[in-house]
Length: 108
Image 1 (tube, helix red, strand yellow):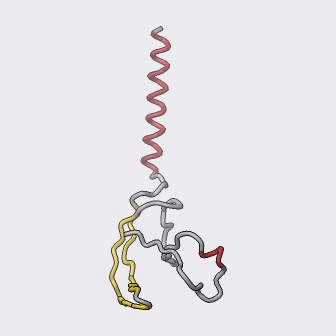
Image 2 (spheres, helix red, strand yellow; image 1 turned 45 degrees about the vertical axis):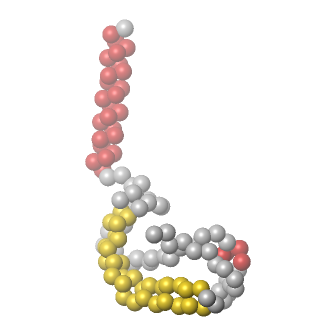
Image 3 (cartoon, helix red, strand yellow; image 1 turned 90 degrees about the vertical axis):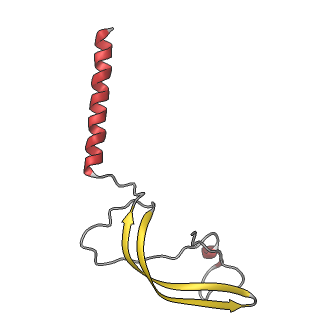
């Protein structure tokens, strides 16, 4: 589910119009981790969660839903950060490729 929204109608208190243009997404603040999160600037992740509360609001004939969500686990799957093993595999593949090219040049 895409969680992006656009502000319609009146502005929230103390907000500038230019700051509200485009899509806006809920954010998650994480602190006190014992190790780096290990993700790139963008990606995809599997999230384990628990709904702590849910609210349904109807105003001017429009219904909106709000949730307080406890995020219990965050497992990146589309991170741009490479593991040490991936980097070593890439180096190995480069060396093998160069070696094969050199062998082909020697055969000519």
